[in-house]
Length: 427
Image (cartoon, rainbow, N blue to C red; front, side, top):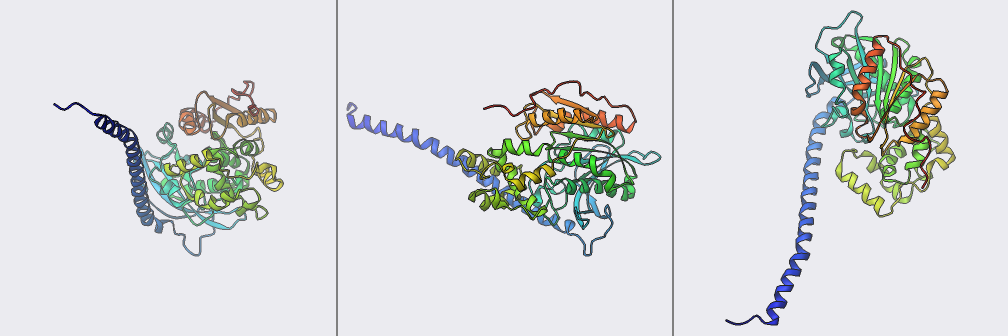
């Protein structure tokens, strides 16, 4: 037997070292390959699905002038117990009154309608991205954020109607975080529900929204009577509403959230206000990428990875705090809803660990609006983040909505202090 020599020991050490280096690299490469492969497969499938859906969302020319006109409907292809679920295309309007088409969804109880028509709940969704596939009625997850409340509202006999907003899935642009545009799309979705005979929808409604949709809902509370005096709004409910815009932007502009939401603002606000331009507030990198990022859906995992990597690499989207730019600050204040009048019942739910719509700006809102006399019922949800806000608050919102349709008094709780300090945390 020949004893081991130094060459054999060296060779063994080399092989060991080689596998210690190569195995992790191979594993990472394999995972990246699988991730990229899965992403490409998903994109191919999504493209095929969107191509098949595109004709439904093509508006006729000329477009009917009357807001709320139903252009067409078809089955949505989801199972909602006790309800008929339809995809719809309807006429809404731009802030200047120009008619435009919006997609949306409507969920109609299968039980008989009461005399006077069914109560209506108008749902306003949160930030999803500006690409066609991001529109709820065109997405692979049309029931996002509806767990814990949609089935209950259907069981109570309510028609639930949900706008996509003009420009999201239809010819754009979407006027993201532009209060009057969002409010018109929501209110006109209620008109569309009433125009659909099988819905048997009455003229009483409540609006309910999350995040961007909370912003929409608050503006509906202010503008509903002006937009549609024939309808009766009984209350406004919002989960994690993007309300105090200057506070939120001032806190998030240099974070990953700034990379995620900033591009939609950079597309939308200059489209609504020609005095604004992206080059006033964006970095060179931000200007090169904002339109592409805005068109990505927020559910896209590869987008989330890209934004995290950009932030970790020190790349900035905004050149500085946009609310320090006079024109952008003025427009942010214009799109910040004022305190709700005391005549309009209001329910707001906010999670204490929200990483997107931070908790403290809505604590500021609570103190300001309560001092102004708003009829506010505030629900603070301990340990709840942004993505869980609507589904966590859902049962409480359903009960509150039922009380509004039943004509019961509100339970204003402004005497209770906010669960978090109503000021920016100190570094």
